[in-house]
Image (cartoon, rainbow, N blue to C red; front, side):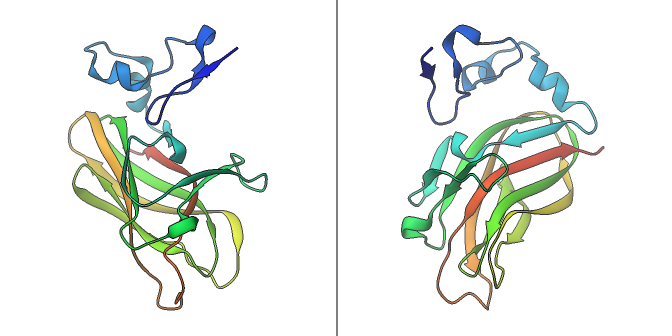
Length: 181
């Protein structure tokens, strides 16, 4: 069966679209969806797959296969990494408190990324390490979402660790928002 979709939408087999899947087309509907209800459940995870971005805010990004990572897919700006590279996503978040986990590959050329919900910076992650490893996780807690609705989630390269003298690279496999209160 053909696979259909585009950046910013859920890719599904066209004959198996379920009512439980929310796409960008559904974000403007006034219907309460399963995704919205799930976002109200404590402990519910909202997984943002990096290749499903809505907008490239800066940079050249490649969707690559990597069998050594959790999803066996990574998104990287490795070809021409630069300070300020970033991507933006649309995500429904219910009012409440969240933790944000980034899952990534680390090494000595990785950047610092800042994460935003709407225009507010909610977390900063230093992805640098002296030697490489895959599927590393860092978590920021206490992220407050004041009102329910579709939010702009983005991450932006914001400099690099003082020990990193060569790059602004990002190799990421997932962002996870977990409702904690």
